[in-house]
Length: 155
Length: 451
Image (cartoon, rainbow over all chains, first blue to last red):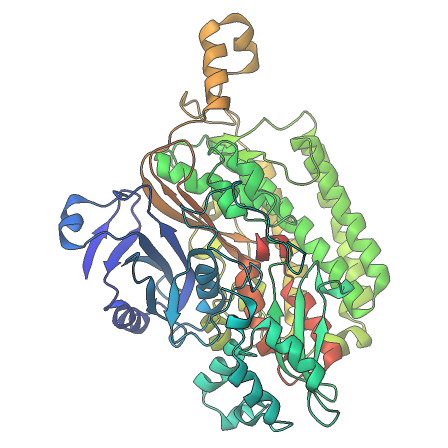
């Protein structure tokens, strides 16, 4: 695990996919009781992103990045984890057992980016219809050029 | 992917054959279950896809538990929230909120709007407290620009005042809808009446009752209009006796208390585990308010109390909101005393368009004005997460910028979206009539849930 502080002065840590749950577990025991937010970014058209040179040498940048914001109520501080997920295998362990509040957030990330969470109890689409094709927040899912999908209409 | 592929048929068969005995999914004594099991059960809820439950509902026989569908067009679901409830008699066994009926891809839209236009998009998310949405978006943008410490004092205090007034109007709306849901229909009229007075002030200041786009990166769109102080004082003077009326009409009323006390109970650990914030978390007795605990704007310089409950029930959440109106009024009074003079937006040419008067006399100003409104301003590469206390809890904005004039990714951590996860837990084992009280006490805004 490499640690850095971005220029915006937030506590940002880069975690590898395999260390993800381990890191969450140790952070939780350090007092980060709440997972405030979990989202993802698709860096398809901006592969460089913002990473300090020393961190860039330690991790390999992938297309997807999972961004997890943890909050410590007792210490009044936040930490942000950034996890690289490859295009060929966009999957990661679910944080549900540690932070049940991530249930809806992980479903949203799955719905919007197609990132799957191993061990999630109910990984279904949450905002889009059940039978929707495609993942809207991916960068190759362009706006406006997608034919409108109607449920149950004659095509 | 087709619908049939998503149907996990074997799972559906299992659930049908389980009949009335739901085993571990049925209500058990809290003492008999580990804390983790309670959370897992309430978090995982129905574990079926929408279509499975729909097909299941047809095959249920009478002696089995019944899955009924509440909403999305139910008057007490605050918009288009759909709840699937599994009932045994009148007892709610499991509940699953089904959302997305209002999803319009606002985060995707945000990627094609400039940072200048972004406010018009985010303000439509939580339409009951639009100014807080604009505030968090502006603060995230300012953090990326590196100007978050340079916002003029007057702009900061104007932002604070509007944010607090918006909290008042949002909580008044809660009073109205909560009253209506529980059956105190006259409360609906009173709540809307008082809220309208706050909105009338917003209209004077911003030009619009809702969806203001008034708080913008760099400050606010305009200075406060002449006579604003009297307007606010008028509001502050009128509200206390109205709130006293609410106390008579609701707080002390036996029927009201019966409907809310002990309903939708959640413990502190459960609320934290489910990432619930705002009045839900505070109703469990934990004094967590970002305004006090992680101060932004100038909240560290004003005095106010963080209202907490002690039982974590719907009545606590009602009284927290009622008293938060009073605390917000207290803050607004202090803001009135301390409102500084000066600029209402940053004098940084990069983010601030030239004043209207300059455009008539200076060609450069005209060009500058044109460019900033057509192309927007460029925001340095980077990513930032900013969170503030909205009336519903922690609203956060995560922006990743690639150095262009539009956000590369704009995500809003919507408090309602996260908070509705507590509904299955709160409804678990309660009566179906209390389900309405629970939905109401979570106070979700569906525009924000679905975005």
